[in-house]
Length: 431
Image (cartoon, rainbow, N blue to C red; front, side, top):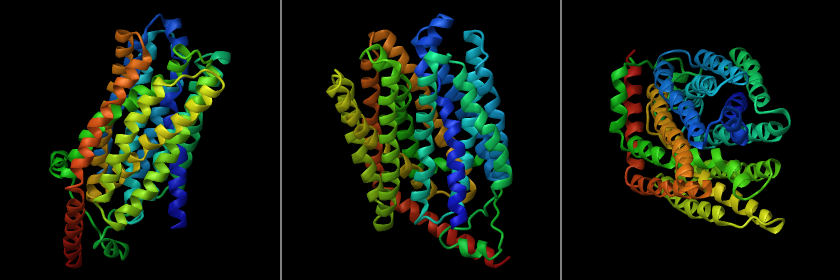
């Protein structure tokens, strides 16, 4: 167990730097727009292509993750993805910026299905929630790291240096991962099957591309895919334009706006850890309580987030209250994330999880990518980033509806998987 936790922490650090790349450009949107003569909509398009291309690539990587060694795939994807990130620093035109950002999406898109398939075979269902929460904070912490590097260095050193600083560590960490990580046995911790696998029996299934369609027959998968599309529209627009909003419409300087963003990020980290911890306890007590918990906290997060954008930031009291409100809003917005990933792990077979998370990443990233573009387009149309982000936040209402519906189906889907794994165990006994 101790070694497994160490691997989770290593993967988390690896993904922190990978996710830092997603937000490193956000604090310097104004500088980049001024240099290349573009507007919010065009910058939003760059961010969208980065996300959507990564999601499409993840479909291939998810298939490969279910067939081949996940450690080698993860290392390769990270090293390949970081080269375009480094080259972004040398972009001489909007076209070059667009190209290198699109290519950088390969690393992020590939890592998602591989990492979650990897940890799904390291822990049993009664413990996965806590481990998923630890790995999930890599997105929020990575966003903070990218925002801090971009925000504090952008105005003094230019927008290019931050891209070098966020790409270099992962080149080293990716090489270290080849020697540090070991491939876990598939099915080693499944109910009714794991004991046989740990004793040395081989659990093997033939993987084909057509099997993607079968994943949609599980109602939990379908509902979580749908909420992923809706829910990540605000996750795309709000974090990406948040610093620029406080600079442009609340007259905060880059440093203060970045500090405010950090507290939003810390609220997100706290929400992920709490959501993973409480979600696991609810799962162990009564499985249907998990989607209920997610639906309620998501609903609360909508109205708290909208309240933040209407708040006066007159210093110093206004900024202090804004920081507190932002922390609380981000906390409630983030509790659902680790629970969603844990629910997906707990209703799908080990040999399906790479493809499953590639589809989830696709739906998740389509929403995020479209959210960035929609946020930029709404800002251009409405003449206000704040109005654009409030409109985006209301997409979480649809997310809450799907989670309420899921209460009816989740426990039954878990039961069906357990029964299937027991049948697989019977087959192994005859080998």
